Amino acid sequence: MKIAIDGPAGAGKSTVARAVAEKLHINYLDTGAMYRAAAYAMLEKGIEPERSQEVVQALPEMDMKVIYENGMQKVLIGGKDVTPFIRTPRISRGASDIAVIPELRLKLVELQREVADEYDVVMDGRDIGTYVLPDADFKFFITASPRERAKRRYLEMKDTDPNADLDEIEREIIARDKTDSTRKFAPLCQAPDALLVDTTEMSREQVIKLVAERVSGEK
Ligand code: C5P
Image (cartoon, rainbow, N blue to C red):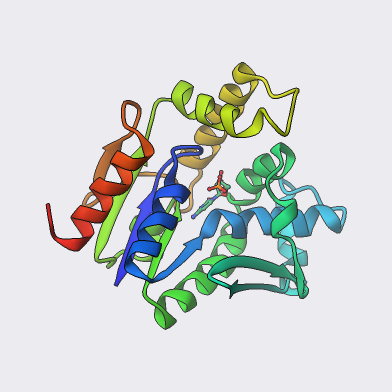
């Protein structure tokens, strides 16, 4: 069983993907975490993610592994778990910048397909239904208006970051959407056979129910 969940930043894909994977007792692969970890790895080496030549040169040394511990995904770089360090605005922007580099994408897509070959999986990202798993059993494209996505991010961030600013988050989300959907190689777009789910007016529970029912054949 392969399930592809794509969509723009902050649409709630990971929450839905994780919940559906739990219901089905299968693995969840957050591919965004891999692009984030790659940006982190380059920044640690002093390489800016948008400097594609330098990134490509450093790629052979980038040792990335995805492991599962107690059902939780971890991304290791050179054996170190970088998962706690990749949810910052700097890394979000860096992940989007590094994700335009075809050589980098090909390396990560290879790892993603290895996971799909080995396990049943719910995978979320930007190009899963269109490029990584074109033969997935189920495909969903989950989206919401930029303002709604920014509001959800803001609510998540405001307790830990007193400087969180709704307008700034919205601008950042719109900028990332633009980079992701206009890149040449495997851009963010809805696969023709994916079900479009606009969650602007939906609760998290409604989205999870809709996706789970579709997958289990109830609807
Ligand atoms: O999903 P998340 O926001 O963690 O992804 C971070 C960035 O990684 C995205 O903005 C996108 O540029 C990139 N990405 C991608 N393809 C994927 C998953 C993520 O290009 N399959």
